[in-house]
Length: 157
Image (cartoon, rainbow, N blue to C red):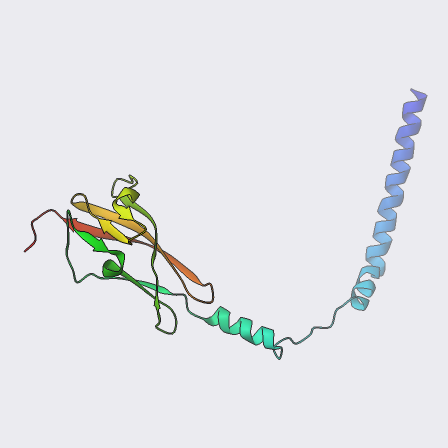
């Protein structure tokens, strides 16, 4: 019992001393004095060539994906992706559109209707298909969009 009280007393004395030291540091303003001495000077990087190039790239608008809404798509059509979608960078240059996924309105994977080698899609049946598309410009800025394509079940005119 005596050992326990001695241990407890030592801990209590150590805690009181620690609190007094902390109170002295904060009340004397030692932290503010040390803080004033460690302030860093700010450097202006805006004149550096790398900074200017980086700023241009960051201000560049992201590429855009366009959908050809003028045409009507029908079940059984074999269509080039370039007929349906087009991509464009900030300067208006044409970009390749990458198909990352195709699902039907129910969420079922329909990538089997896309032929990656020929960049063509065959609509097996009427419905609404959601294409997940990606375009990337020369500065590695990219855009990913999901676009719904309605496929008509009526016969072509």
